[in-house]
Length: 397
Image (cartoon, rainbow, N blue to C red):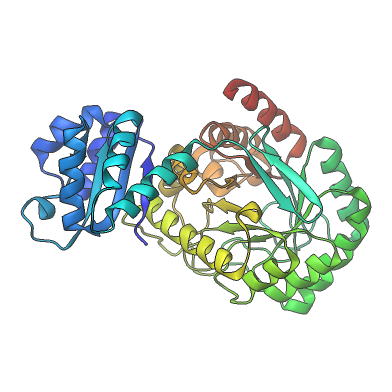
């Protein structure tokens, strides 16, 4: 299925870069880039005949359409298209496309649905017996790593008593979800055997049931997820976006659990070995869409789905910053967006600070992410970030 993206273009230079990446004629770039500041839709890899009809119909309604040189000289079979229009012009275009051939009526429906999804601002996330209201306020996911080697808190909560006390502390400080992990997924981390991972997390999950707070299991292994969900967890936070273990989606569906579908390039061993993208947001959106399709085909309903661009998972510093600036593009799915920047290396790289001195940097990334569409933040410092979220929510309105 062809991607439909609603671009977050806030500067003319962003529009210029996008059109240059598409190989639009320089004269066309000069004419159209000043207009491409809002409601810009990119259609990727659509048939040329559809692109030419779209251009004709949107121009007739006062909009603009940017096409690459290959589309103009008819030398390609499929092409990317950049649509620039007001909401009213899009509405008129969609009505016209309903009367067209070549699957343009279906394309019009997808454009209409993408705009509706982009405008969505609240969700009820079904998580076992819990119902989480995302959007009305930012949901706080507190991190609890039962590992000796996690990059930030490895070794801090290995004893059951320490882990349970930390979970209670995070709940008191404003956590809405506790995310428990038994294997570090930092770059270069060693894999943990399934039985060892279960041994670390299952007793903690069982003892935390008395807190009556949603528990998420941070794993990409279906056997660990199955055991954790049976023990009382109600969400799976899968760094692979349902890719590493083909049984994961069916396990989540069977338990009627929520699932975080995250983007990763490579795996935890290889992901930071010179990651490269032609279009970082475009590739992330394609990956997440495939993960969503896997989930839906397995019987997981939309009310159980959350997406995460995977900050730091196969990305350079510039990739991560680009994602944060343009996070609102993920709103095209119409699903809650989770962001996890807490104490990560992008902050250390910019501020030249060790892990435990990255709170201010995390505050900045959390506030920007919420303003750009994140409805769930995954953090270590719950009390501080809960306050930041409340203040940012108030500003955002």
